Length: 434
Ligand SMILES: *[C@@H]1O[C@H](CO)[C@@H](O)[C@H](O)[C@H]1NC(C)=O
Ligand SMILES: *[C@@H]1O[C@H](CO)[C@@H](O)[C@H](O)[C@H]1NC(C)=O
Ligand SMILES: *[C@@H]1O[C@H](CO)[C@@H](O)[C@H](O)[C@H]1NC(C)=O
Ligand SMILES: *[C@@H]1O[C@H](CO)[C@@H](O)[C@H](O)[C@H]1NC(C)=O
Ligand SMILES: *[C@@H]1O[C@H](CO)[C@@H](O)[C@H](O)[C@H]1NC(C)=O
Ligand SMILES: *[C@@H]1O[C@H](CO)[C@@H](O)[C@H](O)[C@H]1NC(C)=O
Image 1 (cartoon, rainbow, N blue to C red):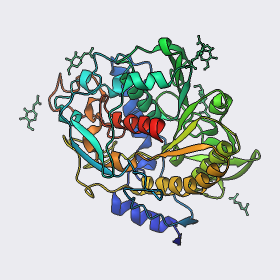
Image 2: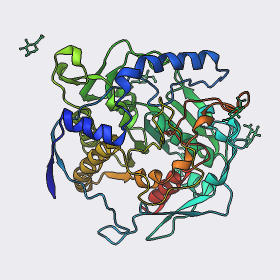
Image 3: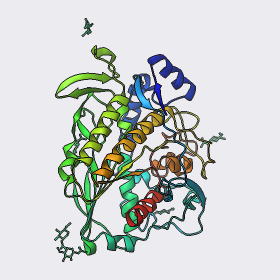
Image 4: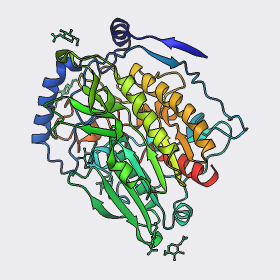
């Protein structure tokens, strides 16, 4: 069912106001917030090698008009079985889990401070005791030893932004119950890293590429930018494409960075921009850029004749309540939400529609070319986990000095251990049986 979805500035504003959509107040608050971060960081005794601002690692986001596009209306209902009668593991429920998490803040030493909720003093632990139960089948728990055996001489990469980094840590922590990973590479800012499981000769990388496409970014460590991002929509980021052939498995994801102010290029010529009112350029909307880039990524994969397995991970929701991250929003829940309690916000809906739409087109072509392209569709199961974010516990002991301290909450990234460990149960299932 194809329907023309037309967005314009006005309807965007209306939607935004109705949904209290988080990007909106950015234009105004960006400077204040940037300042707040600097103060926070200056005072912080946090020695994490990756001291980034909490969301999108950056504060320079602005009200994004979405420009009218033709779009398939996605029937995002989901069924428990696919057309071949195979179980759809992404449709299911969170049910109580009696076992223990596969790792803890003590057994796994590589959890980034901002996501190490246990170490930071998050008092409740109920959020650890849920497992994902697909409606059509059983999802086995990740078996690290079995998995590592399968991965002898193989290499994986997680490619994307800070959520991919969050994910790789969960992956490594689970595997480290069998053998500790040794870090063998990191770049200057610890954004791209590589580890080795020596007994298995198994390599795992995280590759920093928040746009997947070539980007010139002019930001300091506080996320304060001095100029618009220059985004080359037609040139994929060499940070990952140069390694592509040598990788056996990849999990690619992107999305949230596209809402930032950017100038779009194709063939080194300016096409237009996203949110650049001072520039007298055509506003193309971030949806335009995201769709183009995803399409290029898929085209690249399809024409690559790659023999490994490639996943595209869908967008992940945040769960700010009572405000946004810069306006006192929190995520205080202690257990999963009920179906329907949280809706995807407008931004995530747009990103997801593009992902599903482009993946559907690409997967038919991939099948023809015998390229193993899969969707790791974690959006819905993650939407049900408002209890899984660090909230104020992105900082160490945030209430030690002042019980009433007001903190900037992180309701976007995920506590480790936590709900995203399930993403790896799903990955393993798809690798072993997919
Ligand atoms: C792990 O978390 C507990 C609280 O859950 C805390 O007491 C302990 O200091 C933490 N240890 C490390 C090494 O982070
Ligand atoms: C891994 O590579 C080594 C050295 O090339 C080889 O001897 C071994 O058989 C390989 N193992 C597997 C499972 O492919
Ligand atoms: C490790 O795996 C790579 C392939 O990924 C292979 O070329 C190499 O020989 C292996 N090394 C050992 C020591 O098995
Ligand atoms: C590529 O990686 C480097 C080092 O991690 C990073 O500074 C750069 O921003 C990355 N490129 C893009 C387009 O993200
Ligand atoms: C903006 O661009 C249009 C078309 O390129 C041009 O006609 C117009 O004069 C420009 N306005 C300014 C203020 O530069
Ligand atoms: C915290 O707030 C409560 C009321 O909300 C107040 O009674 C208490 O004195 C405050 N504590 C501190 C340390 O400010």
